[in-house]
Length: 108
Image (cartoon, rainbow, N blue to C red; front, side, top):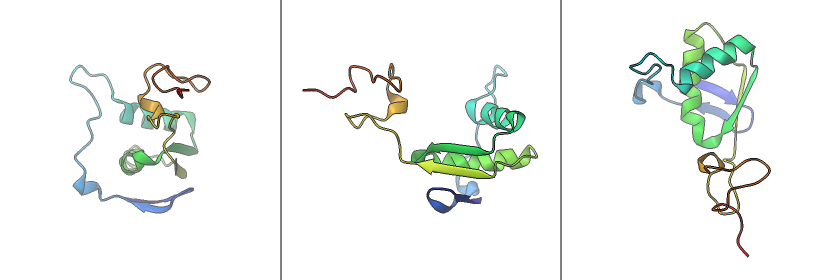
């Protein structure tokens, strides 16, 4: 699976080397990669911007979108958002855009 990333340029992942993604839990509830693909198609999303640490997931999601009969024309990756402590923002339990949690805030 190959695509032109608006930030990083041409990207590709070898999908056969990646394990098949789990789309639905045993209880029937969808996991993120499936739910977000369906939601993106339903809402007519045209651009997806994610952290560069999700480049592999982007290939999986583009493949899933194609299987569902859709296309997101412009995926792009950006450097992973980090707080002052260099902790990944997505892993910060109580952070928001306006105020990082106490563990991630700079110390004097």
